[in-house]
Length: 218
Length: 183
Image 1: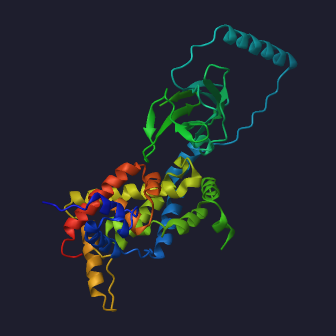
Image 2: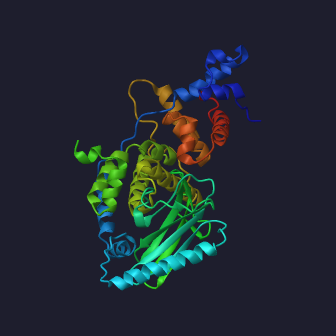
């Protein structure tokens, strides 16, 4: 039968008790247990200097591989400048159309979504993705992803009155983007209305694929 | 110390993502040895630790765009290294090559000061640690070799303090059994 340490001796090993805190009958066992920790080698381990050169050689090779460069071109965010030449009547007409659309929205509010979702709208030169999250208890919400280098401050969502719905619209370049919502500046939440993928480190990211024709969640 | 060495992890990560690949060397220098002891104790050898740390640093570069919180690069890198160490242990177990302190024992350097008994005990402990489960061994390494509190280990690994204590207490009993006659 295996002889186990008394629970108080385990607390001694954990550093929660001293040897003098133990009842007299347990002190011999406690002293034996401390001999175990007394032989622990805590010396630092230094890796050879060649490691740095090896890592950087591999990093440079990967950074310059055509495949990686093509991938980065596809997914890296870029600044897009839109220049429009418009006639004044177009502006007036556009404003009236926008007002009419807003009136329709106010007259027939959509049912609140159960969770969040990215609503996708395509324009001619860029694709606007509308991110929506239902978070009635949140004080602030933002969306962060590969398109803004996971900057939690770059794309805040705006609360839509008392509905508990938060939204924002972000122009995304063509490519596949991983993202997640950040609630109250600290809590990462995958889009509950979009399938998620494992980020490789035990957390879930949502994915939106953007093409010239539009965008869809994956 | 150059300016780059004073930059925060966030600044370095952002520079690398912006295309300045050479800045990654700052992170390599900053973290290469910090986790070396963990890897060496988990894998039983400095050589294996070198491979694991190198793989983890390269993988972290590959996945850098997914690093949500560049300020916490160290913790993120640790998780990558941890996954690598656990995978290596599983691979060796599958291949019937259990880790043992003979690979190039990290805990028993030759000493000529006559402390033979101490060296033997240290070697015996190293052998015994290799017989623990990976989770038990990890918590022992982080607490008693790296000197971390349970709360810090919980924050790094994602386990609860209660489950860490349970692993550790089972490890104490197993070590007592394995080291009978050495202590």
